[in-house]
Length: 381
Image 1 (tube, rainbow, N blue to C red):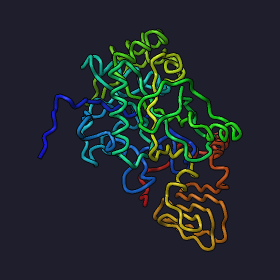
Image 2 (image 1 turned 120 degrees about the horizontal axis):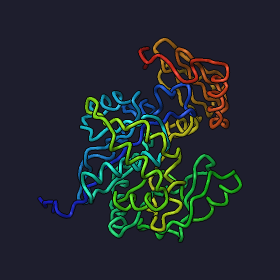
Image 3 (image 1 turned 180 degrees about the vertical axis):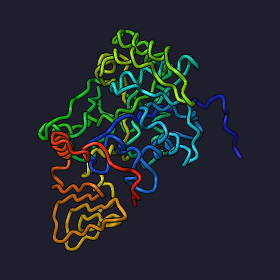
């Protein structure tokens, strides 16, 4: 049996971002219990699946204990869900309030660099679906080659359909199929349908997954160059952090001075050393009920009837009841999403799945508690 040369294995620290609260999967996902902590596909939650994806060792890479960026409301959920799948967490940094991805990633890089000046970080949202773990690890291994040459790497997903809900990456040249890093030309905002169709026909546009691989030292140089004020604020927040029952609570006062901005806007759009690893395997951010329907293996009529749901003469329909108290039945439905919970029901046209966030806004405006909160002590299926 061949032995692995441990000296050649690159050690990578995963950084999982899980402080967000998406609204497009309401009523299942709400501010108090967002989609990353819910088992949307299969037994594991999206957060657990992400943590498992970034664990273990193969011939080229070894994943260290994951670092987690979250908020105070989710800190115990994070530890409980990691323990449930046998993962011992690394540092868990508590954000006093959400300030988007740039301050969170900067805090992770500063913390990692203080402990290991040569640290390599793999930063990812915790609510994505990537079933082919082997293919993803292979892409990460190719990214390490670019990182060793001073590059900041992002992963570009090969589009599979016309999509207006994602940002795009324009590559400087068309990939040759070998999966090596290609210089990024520019970031593209979420396009309209006409522009998305044009980009889909070309070979130089990829979906922006928001997954990054870099040396902590290199990203810190970029923050110092392009977001120096944020560097000062986050440094102070980390220096004044308090250890609280194993969690690292970033200091609130300096943290609030950091700009509320994404890492793309703050740093990545300005960095001259950004490369893209094309990723051809399946990926989804489950950014709406249409994506959940699509990835839940609809039957020959396009129907997904989850536990607690019955479909009769339906087409292209998603039915789901996330409560032991409710059975949902659809008859003669076409292109419908119907999600039932104990305290709220969503019924929408499948083509309007991206508008579900408007329902949350409407409920907020009328003061309905269901917009953000619900009782997780209810027995959910």
